[in-house]
Image (cartoon, rainbow over all chains, first blue to last red; front, side, top):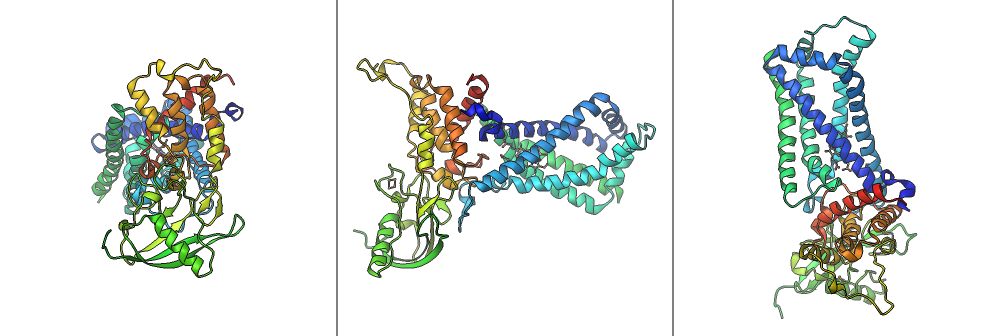
Length: 224
Length: 256
Ligand code: HEM
Ligand code: SF4
Ligand code: FES
């Protein structure tokens, strides 16, 4: 019966797909952070890493499309689940007391997600579109030392820095629920390991976004 | 008998004539309610008052009034079965409220639990999920094996028993922001999955029950944990993780 529609057309299958895409994004974000943080202590290293990521064919033509697919899949699936869940309660309660039984983060994944999506729009506009334009439309010569300067330039604008900071706060909230939630969705729950996963998730959800905020503020303050 | 002062309360109750009626909240006053009375006794007093006034009493489900049948579905002040942990509405006492309080009383809200009248909802979607696989087939021809003859690990037996304490009340669905039935279905899947007797139909069971759950229009779990927090029987989220595992492995390996 169930196999008629296939497991990925089921509620649990969708959740599993959601969790897998989310775990992929979590790994990606760690890698992205590791590269960015070098900009706060070594211009050379940052340029070298950026140049590698920007020109390596495996990164450009295999990993990058996978990443874009992962992000797009994650938020589209997020919208699909949200729409289905709203339909599952067509008539709303007059009064609800959500705080009595769940966290704000867990109930508002769609809102934290939408802020992250808006941020990604800005981020693409800032870095990705100029990058694609530079490399694949204008066919400018490779310049291994341009990345650091481009980065500094972006973080001179206080409004942009402010938007970045707000987005990372929301990302932190998204992950404070999401990290451990992804493991539960996959059925990975264990008396011994789950408490460790929850701690690890909280550490990740705070340290990584705080790290990105630090990078943005670091360059902004240095530009003053 | 308690000498505590009676409570004067304002009740905002969902009234709906039938499935086609749009329904609305109506306001009633009750006075001198004993703090020792149960919430349902307070509702009885309201209903007698309404009958005396020549009005239609509020329809609500109730049966055992001792926390075991699961019928007393009421969403009180924004929570399934009202304030407090591990209680059903029949076990909720008026001492949880203060004199002068306004209390909101609504039916369970879920597309899969349509309102029949006032606070009464149709929970037959749960029955259909059970019929899809919530059973084991046992030979009853006279040579039935004694269940105690099959060794079961103590921890599995305990977890299975804990899952089997689910009373099918639907508070999990009512509390979940997604109206998801995962806690209920996972309890029913787990109680069998943990025992040797449940193995024969294990794959079909989880696939069919989840399929039926989806057909009924329950939402997707987003792991908020509201169900576990409001479940009167303390059914654990571990059951949901177990069902996810069972479902995935059955989905991948089943040849049907
Ligand atoms: C692009 C914008 C994004 C949107 C619109 C979005 C939306 C959502 C939504 C609605 C959920 C809840 C779905 C559910 O629990 O069933 C969710 C879960 C999650 N998201 Fe996102 N998200 C976005 C970006 C991200 C990013 C960048 C990360 C990580 C770096 C992330 C990590 C997670 C995690 C870990 C979960 C939990 C998965 C689970 O419960 O199985 N999200 N997201
Ligand atoms: S899991 Fe708990 S809340 Fe849900 S139906 Fe069973 S007893 Fe009721
Ligand atoms: S009336 Fe039976 S559980 Fe409340």
